Length: 212
Ligand SMILES: O=C(O)c1ccccc1NCC(=O)[C@H](O)[C@H](O)COP(=O)(O)O
Image 1: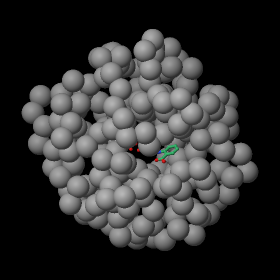
Image 2: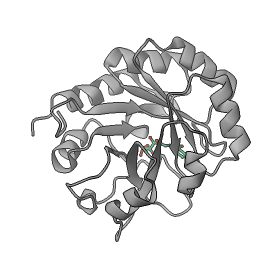
Image 3: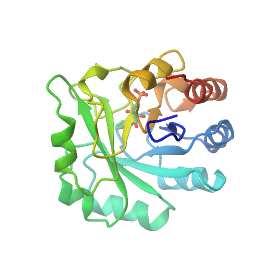
């Protein structure tokens, strides 16, 4: 349960195969992430993403991730796919994130000195902030945790915690950070971009059974 009394939401990110999307939904995931960042080992084409979206049952959100992508590319994805939420992983400004008139979350890559309040103020149009690990030259999917004490307990917007989460550490992360939701990629994989259904189930079991 998160502070509002609702369960902690789960997003399984970096889905590249329809069967992994189906496994995530069956395990109780609230959202899946599709990476439109060509340099990522988890990048998907529009065709792959369309097959993944088509395989999903109702009430599982489809999140499209970009990192400093050209606006034409983002518009094409929005025109061709049933995307519920955008996720911006790069150095996009608020104006750049707002220009699609589509709901989005902005990623903060957290390092010492990070100020969540200031970050929230910079992105008033974001419906949530996803806090991920800062690593020089890497836009996301680092597989590394960060110092969760850098996040304040009082927040202006829903906070999604990411970065190196797995079944062994997610309960502790939720107890300490009390996020709205958690996001995982590498921690539920058999290989880059290939999810492991048993690890997804175990991860969501941990989230749903955490005692705070
Ligand atoms: O996954 C990637 O390769 C990636 C590349 C560039 C931008 C974002 C990327 N993934 C984004 C995610 O949402 C991941 O779930 C998040 O960074 C956490 O990843 P992990 O530490 O592996 O759980």
